[in-house]
Amino acid sequence: MDKRSEDIQQWIDTYSDILLNSALFLLSDRQDAEDIVQNVFISAFESYHSFQNRSTVKTWLMAILKNKVAEFYRKKYRQTGKISLDQYFDPDGSWKYDDILQDWDDKDGNLLDNSDFNRVMNECMDKLPIKWLIPVKLYYLEEKKADNVCQETGITTTNLWKILQRSRMQLRECLELNWFNIS
Amino acid sequence: MIRRLIHALIMPCKQATLLIEQRNADEIPFFQKIRLRIHLTICKWCRAYNRKVQTMEGMMKNMFTQDAPEKFTKDELQLFKDKLKNKLK
Image 1 (cartoon, rainbow over the protein chains, first blue to last red):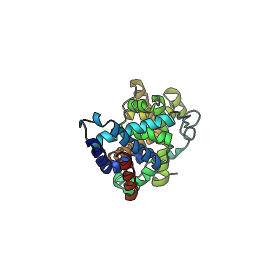
Image 2 (cartoon, one colour):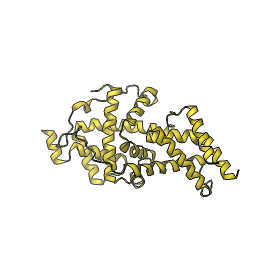
Image 3 (tube, one colour):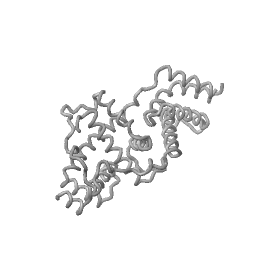
Image 4 (cartoon, rainbow over the protein chains, first blue to last red):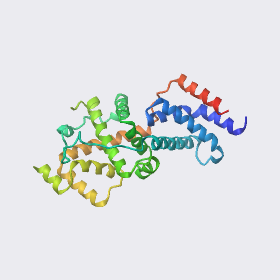
């Protein structure tokens, strides 16, 4: 076996876990996650010689993964469809319901360390339609660099803001329903 | 009544909530930023929403600094590795 094959075999052993879990986090579909991670390793195999230890192997593979997810989105979901906010706002653009006024209760201030809460948060994220979920996750993964996300996914900036706004509304609603008990 | 006035003079809540996203990314144009600030000063609905958004930003940040949840079982991972290693020999 040559050096390249040896390295790849070892990388598959070492990094499959983190790549698969990250891919599932980004795509929330197991089969898509497996397919994409397989493509990540195939790409790594093919472009092995362009990897010159400028970054760690893990960073390199994660960057390939991110690109593959964006490419997957571009091919499959480029048409974002109409993003409607009608369930939250009146035709004149005012809030429909007053439940927005009830503040969230985090008296102890340690919500983020609460594993039950984090599970609910993840479940609420996963309830977003996939055509919104992927850009939202890429956006946070890339530390809110909207231009990058738009370029990679082929979404217009206008639509990205709308997707973020709409997803936020839904996430808030889901958290209030399943955690904060506001209705 | 006052809500109508806010909308006529500054902007509707529907637009303010979009600008909040842009502001969080530091991508909001200067005049929009001022309009948003005025809107938030007079609109208690959007002010409450804005507080929730800031809390959610903390949650998101937290979510993305942690490792992804481990949802694949040991067996699934092993099977995946074995198949792929065979393929890329």
